Figure 1 (cartoon, rainbow, N blue to C red):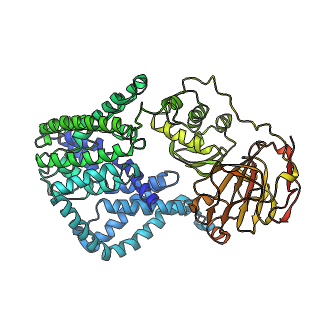
Figure 2: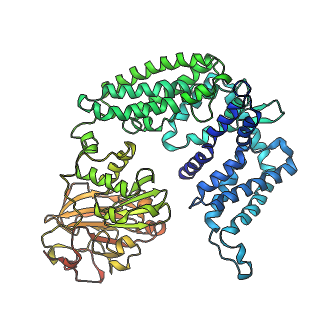
Length: 636
């Protein structure tokens, strides 16, 4: 559900991007500026049709390939829904942007389901993507029939909540400001913004049109609109830039030159445009306590602005551009500058005190021996160099939308998988590359994937600057020379049937992207160590364990396929990372029934990640008891 809501939030950003153009046109056309009615009407053309714009944009965002066919279906769905409901309920119960959001979601989901549908030959013209608007129309007709009865009480509840929030005074605006910032890491702030900005409150303009939402009402001249927008100006124009100054002042002397330019640029971006994500992400994950303080101060700014009866608004965000552009529509706008200066001082003092007192690791304060230090991030550390080139090979930070990983693979959401340079990925350590869909890929790295993924995440927040030097890096993409593993030094880890790796139903294993080995169809309930050595890696969800023999042979035991999604259910870890082990020691208890029911397969690959295929010899097949030796051998 969280992922679904986040998809809605991400999809909302595309239609919301139309607001700056609408606000600019609408504002420039007003009689206190250029007094050109047709320019104001052009801006109103966007503001007055936000619902259908949302339907189009969200449908595109939900479609797996961002297709225009999905966008058309979103528009069709919205027109069918609203026309059918108005025929029965009249215009007293208009769904507004909710109708657009619902239509966009339904159209996007239907597009993903039916975009490649085949129909009988005599109806072939209506197959594939052309079928989507048809099924969307039918679906929205049925949905309209249901909403005729369901929507009126829902709208009454929404109106009641909106009236409470709008009438709650300082408490209402303060709570909204706090949640708006606090929810940014999850993306759910877009959902709250949509309610406040485009639905809550009503205003009838001079032409008799009913306008809803804080932004729309403010731009259309509603004198009561603005309290839910005003308090952001002091934060974005003064507070966050002061926070950047505090981080610079608290940075280590030798690192000020490194972080100074970065902090200045993102602070100025916040001041001028109101785009805050760059500076917020500079401390959001490094020092979460500062981010909670930031959210509290935002709520406080909203309250103070409300108490001083300030009504100001924006079409895009609360930066200097919108402050100046909408100055003529505002009430008591100069007070915001005084409030901003006060909050700027508060931000600097509080941030600097907390950073120094709690030794928070904001940019420029990382420990030199810390894996997240500037030397590691910007220097010639091998992992950091690989992270830099891996990001570039994936199309750069603009192409990467999300980074996740399991035991051996990077799992990535990208904008366009076609621009990924597979050869460059393999040049810098990748063992294999799989294109799952247009926007989802997997890169096989090996058991060191966690370190690479975390380095990539840090670099994504810092703009992925090039390493200072690569002279110290020796690319280590070849398998290591290891000592022999005699046939008596490896035993069967669990009762089960040995199958060739080629029969494992997963390309990354079957094509030996991570190394040679074999598969086991387990019949026992405990995984035992097949070697003498130590545990070198345990994945957080306990579905896979990396081992290393005393002679340096690396062994990965991966229980089931795609079992990372089980989040540890069905697994009981019996050892610790770094623990010395002997053949036969119990490593992991497994619930085969649960895994078999909730995972694609229970087949368990056993992979030798640093052994040449030619040096590995599988000696036995079929059913073998746990503890049986002479299963395989590794030549030197």
